[in-house]
Structure formats: C-alpha cells, structure tokens
Amino acid sequence: MSLKGKLLLHGQTDVGSVRDHNEDAIGCDENIGLAVLADGMGGHRGGEMASAITVSTVLETVTEKLKKLKTGDTDDETGYSVESLVVHEAVTLANKNVHDSSEANAQYRGMGTTVVVTLFYDNRFTVAHVGDSRLYRLRDMELEQVTRDHSLMQELIDRGFYTPEQARNSLNKNLVTRAIGIDASVVIDIQEDIAMVDDLYLLCSDGVTDMIEDHLIKTAMLDNFDDLDKAATEIIRLANEHGGKDNISALLIKPIKSFPAKNSLFSRFFDIFS
Image (cartoon, rainbow, N blue to C red):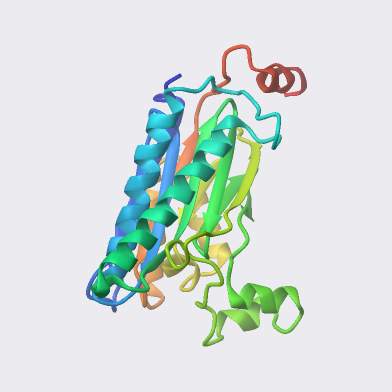
C-alpha cells in the first residue's frame, strides 16, 4: 500500500557555520513512509562515507523487503510487527556494510555513524536508532523526545551525576556509547507506537539538539506546522544562529490521512477505540 498522499515528508541538511564538509546524510521515501538520518564520524571524510552507506543501505533494504510482506502482520516469536523486523534487519546490514568498508580501507578505519530510522504503516510507526540522533513527536501542542540517546552523558544523567541542564554545557556531551560500523555487531533500539493524523515527527542530528533547546524546537514546529519546508529551514536557521558548531539535519514527517492496512487486526482495534 502506497502512503503517498497520506504523509508529508521533508528534510534538509546543512554544513553549519564551522565545519568545512557535511558528514550528515538523510533520505526518505514517501511511498513507503520511510525516513532515515545519519550523523557520521571519522577522519579523512570517513564520516561522510559511513553516513552515506547507512542511509543508502537502509533505503534499499527496506524498500526491497517490504515488497514481500503483508502489511500489519506480527511476528509470533518476537511480538514485533514484520515491519519492525525489516527495519532492524536493514540497520544490522548497514552496520555490517560500514564495518566491512572500514576494515577494507585504511583511510576509513574507525569510521562510524549514528542512525535514526522511522517507518510508518498501518496507523503506527517503528523507530530504530543507534547513537544520539533523535526522534521527536509533537502531538496536541506537546513535544516529546521519543528516543533515548546512547551517550555517556545520558548514562551520567540516568545515574544522577548530571542534570540535563548541566549536561548541555559538558565537554563530554558528544561521546556516544553506540554507533553504526565501529564493531562487527551493534545493539539497535526498536520502538513501536500509534501514529495519529496531525502528529508532527522530527528526526534530527545533534547539530540541532546541541545548539538549541527543546522549547525552541517546539516553537519552530508549531509556528510552521503546515509547512514542513519552512519548519526545517527555521530549525536549521536557529541552530546556526546559536553557533552552528556541527552539521545540522532536520527531517520532518506529518501524517495527514489515516493509513490502515487492509484487514489488519491492529487497524480493526484502532478503529474501535479511536
């Protein structure tokens, strides 16, 4: 089932005000409701390579695998939707591809990338992430951070050593504890949730969240709720205005019509209680 006309998607990426090249990469496919964002790291343009490999691998793998699936089915063994398993498989393959390329090319040795992926289907979505690139959701005027950073700073916050406010000014705030391509295997966080018409979702790199606080992100999304191009432009403008010390990427998704899978159990349940 094509989601064209059911979702609006728009993304922008910017080099920022300090860096001389962009190691972020974004990609999306409105037809299948897929969005992916990666923030690369590594010398000799290894970060660019890692993020590009990751985005292309996820897009290609999910597109091909979805052709063989019945939307809305659940995997009996894991309890996850078959779509979630496809996303997990795609990110796992991206990790392998980046790691293999790093091992085969001395100039790219040690390269890696964060990644956050969202896939919309059957009036719900799956998000998979590794690292500190984030997914936010704006619903009923409230902004929620859906993902939890895989970072040293987040672990210190969780243990009570820092408040979130103190963490923003720490020199260690960008040290991630997981990344695509660093090791031969990686732990991928997967979540599933209901997607509502007029939700607004934001995938972003830490070039956004390190520069501007959540209340400014929320205001930019609310003020440009009906124009995702302007929303992305404003988020990037604000990040540059507040220093632009890193590459800046923002990818927005807005469901504008219901998109139930035909005859799926979830959608029948959703219709009863919505």
